[in-house]
Length: 520
Image 1 (cartoon, rainbow, N blue to C red):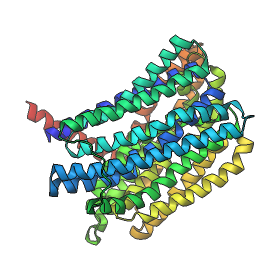
Image 2: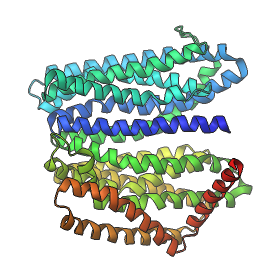
Image 3: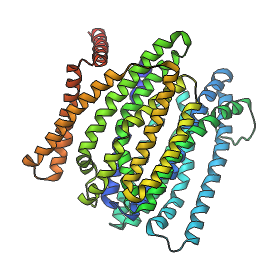
Image 4: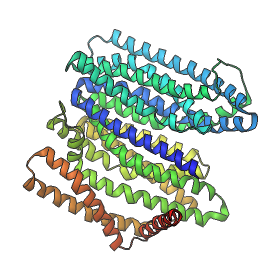
């Protein structure tokens, strides 16, 4: 248990460090680039490498690699496992190098045949040429990190994102020192820093893996383990590809609206990712193994109870977060990003996009949780089918809404698509298990969130009477109003006799009591 807790602590510390550095990176980037053609081009340029990072490096490839590598290690030993790893690395390198070359050629041709491009399109293609090799580096780094995790090493792989953020921040300030406030030159400097960060992300786990006995040798030979990898990889790739294509298409469309649309969509997404990534994903991760163990006809009622608990806790976090961020979106953006060249007008451009985007938080959270539920049932097809429907809805709604509402229209399309997918998943799982009887608890969550919303609205209305400076008011809203609103929300749930809150509190107190008794 001590080793497990130590590994969790390493990963958690690195994740928090990475998120803080990522926030500093985005704040510094917007302070020097603000919202405009250069920032739109730069944001688009790292979208494609990030897409493949999530699709391969953190998605389908790693999900398939880990169980097969583990099996090879346990049954045939380290030498056979490393031999299999070299087969994977050789094929991954060839595939990714081909994609980098093809992508670079497409960008170069695009620039050559379209000489009268708008600035954001021309710069986007030029920045992409520099950034595409990062796709290869980060995916190879992810393979190294996955192998280290299987071998029981978690600390080194978890610091990779921190190295990238440090590199980009360093690249930005090196660019400021060398080029002053030339936005285009600064963006080139940061693109180069992505490559430096990618090299560090790949080199560190490779060095650590080498210390554990691995030696790289190109290997195009076949094996049964590769066959097992493909069986897991290809279905996972289909589902992940739809999700990432959805994100990519939205960003492509944003690039066609104007210079401000893509940066506004990106910043809104970054804020949305905090409650989604920290809380909703954590809840789904905790409940996934529980649901997997209960996937049998004789444990149907237990499965329903656990799924209902997880669903309610997901809504318990996502609904009030939606209310709070929707009401305080301007203050949050101002506090985080209104520095340097990113001014009040840029904040006003982002607020409508964030307000619309955050309305989809409960649906996004439910999709993530329900998908884990289907995976626990060993049903991989339903999430893929609903993802395909979501993609079609998002694309159609984007085309309908973007011309009239701009970036906010794209955000609305994402929300509509997520809502459709969440309804489809919810109906499908209820067709297997019946009603989960969560309506009363959801009603209490909505009631407590409404109370909290009234408080936030009132507090926000009176703040200007006490604090005239907008930046100071934003700080007060985030540092005082948000914690007070959260406390009020949980008090309201307590008064409404939200039993699941009592159960969670009792569980925490019980664990604390056991820990205290052991230390005395």
